[in-house]
Figure (cartoon, rainbow, N blue to C red):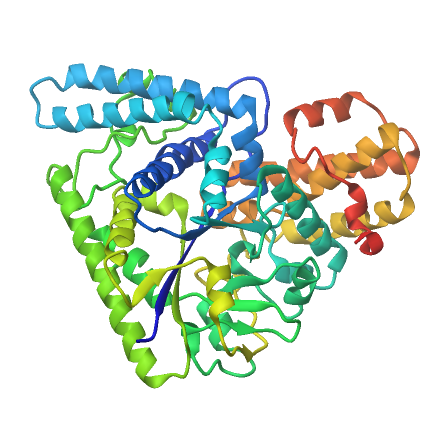
Length: 524
């Protein structure tokens, strides 16, 4: 019987938190939540499956900026303080809820927060990446490389130096943080345009995953649809995302996570209690945020943990059965062996948006282990088993709701890219003018390159488009562009100073191996 393969690719990124004194920005909560609801539950799932000798395989993308934060003593200390505050708040709420129906839910949340603190400080010694590396060494996790910051590759097609700089720094960060060689490359926002594959392939990378329409609307329609990989003329392989599989899980109207029995993570008490009750965690005058305490099912009634877990198991069974049926039907119609279905999701979705999502994933792996004709695999393992592969030229697309880039350039943010484009041109000019500088000037040029990479991040236009911390995002983009311009002007006038440089290096201690010469095309 044809072997049917499920591929899972999870990606993780949050905007970088400046290492500045004083109050932390509201946006720091994204980093804490990704650790508490993403990485730590994900690793606990891996530990359980490994202990039970249940095979599990998935690909994981951790952005270089997120790696920097995970390795930062500054961010680790702040996360530890966040856990302490969260535990103190839960204990406070437990006293207030004595005898109330929600008391058991608060007690369970307190146990969860305490376990997070214990695992982070003791089990993993604050070093999440080391444990991820160990599972990668067992071929349970395949780590994909990605660009230094989440820039949108199609925007820089006419500036190949910008793309090579993003890729070079991304690969340098990968080598710094991981003990494996990357076979795959994650395109931020899955943004693809013609020619991108040639640049990535020149670095020895084998594959990427594309949005469904990018794959299916290729110049030559893939004869096997998204159920088999394809290859570009460069020899670079493409996977097509299975949009149906992903929609089963995460469709905003019909996805599994919306079942009435699941925890309603939108109804967090951080947006309901008064400022005095929340003062243990944060000052509401500086903006509300989540606390981790939610009491309602999506149906509106009091949450039942057992009912949520049982529904997660049923949804895991449905997912596996649906994929099995689709791949079995495809096997009867297509000349492909093996067949695959590629699910692509943000790691944060499985732990935060869908609190039961990690348990659902664990259930999927356990159910797959009981089957003989369908299994999970790493993308590189799948490619080794493909007998014939079709050549295609994929279509320009992204995974944004518009399918393209409408969210990145519109009335809310259209001032950003022209200035970023101008700064990029100037950085390429600086790299060419000062190819051999050392000492203070080299440090200054490296800081300029960092500022530009940070400005190129799609975090800023996406946040302004969604009106999520829009003022903060606009200010961050402006700050990086102004900092870059300061360096450019100082180099032009020959008045390079140290005070501003030292301040920026302290606030953004990223990419220690940064080399501004990455912006010279011939540097490869």
